[in-house]
Image 1: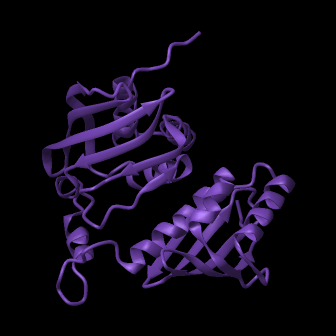
Image 2: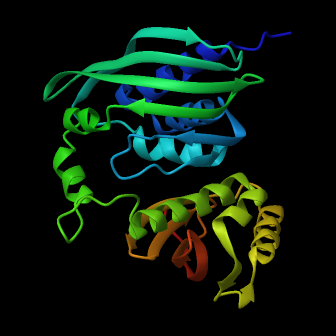
Length: 277
């Protein structure tokens, strides 16, 4: 029997996996395997937060959302020649499931050397992370990766004030990603968290999260390997437009969602294709 990794070892595997995504020149199939391995370190149900995120903390509730997060935020960065966790210190707590881990991401980029301090408070159960509070130097990361100016523009709204929390557009973008992540993982319980109770699908002329579950289940029963890959996503106020590619190479989906009270309330959509290889 393979022993269950200790909480500190799980954190080490996470930071090593992120480092490989950022600095490793991975082939597409290697990158997909690395994303699967990283997501597999988390439970099916999670509560992962980034309290210091400059654009607002967007909780990651499922393994599928974690994979989507890593795919979007930990990709290969141009000009970064090294990126690795160093100086790791593990502090055990009275709760055997919880550890506090201090470390520093250090590396070299076109702008020079950098050191980004991090503190993770992690709960590990049965060898998987089920809860985490990740405190990292997001401003330092943006500076090191040459993303400081876009971040500064995003931080200031039309009135010249920094928003107190996620903007409507950020919420719409996050829900669009959550919807596709949940479909790809066939995470039916997440449907109730993503869609409003009176959600209406204009293409299907049907209402309610129950209809979404039935539709997703029917699609995946007919094509078990079917997934979507988000290609373009534009969000403004309470709406988002998503263009996604079907992995069976039969076409693309164009969807528009409207968000109300933090969930998707309406969806319009059309299918195009086929997509050329």
